[in-house]
Image (cartoon, rainbow, N blue to C red; front, side, top):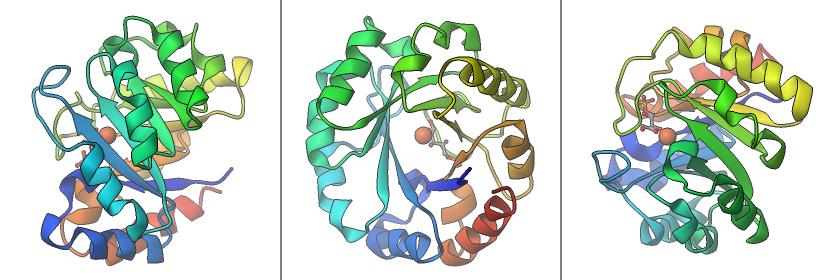
Length: 220
Ligand SMILES: O=C(CO)[C@H](O)[C@H](O)COP(=O)(O)O
Ligand SMILES: [Fe+2]
């Protein structure tokens, strides 16, 4: 299975964002992770469609858009048009999860579902056959730079067991507090898409990507 790195630009230096994204691309990061926050589902506000559209063509990486917004069904079409390849919505944020996932697929993007640290994996069960990816949050969504919550490892194992039964081709992405020091445990638990913000963009993005990719490739 291909191990994928998704650098989260939330932690990037926005005065040189294009160049930093290119550095991660040159060193082998296959995705760019784009965190959208609405100040309601999560306390903070980040960026939205115009920013995505403006950076979309700076790189050829897959744009992995993580919507931390209430009722994301309202915006999936606009994010797809702005350049999203994968759109992740939170189970906790949707009044109709199935309709939201179907709308993502209908506009031509890949659909993913995420759960917060306090939401049990069992709640994913009705939706896993509809998705291309499950995102397990390993921090409470809303901010970069937090510490990895250790109980996430058991949730990753449970999700892998669920997918083995229902949708074995789906990916498991994990997001929050992942560094070269703990990424091995996350991969060993069954994840194959790793989001990393601070670990990539604090310091030398090229060097950090290279080091993370070296670990990921050893698990392929
Ligand atoms: O979704 C997120 C926060 O809600 C971010 O993707 C995540 O926090 C990445 O940042 P870091 O690697 O610094 O923890
Ligand atoms: Fe994220």
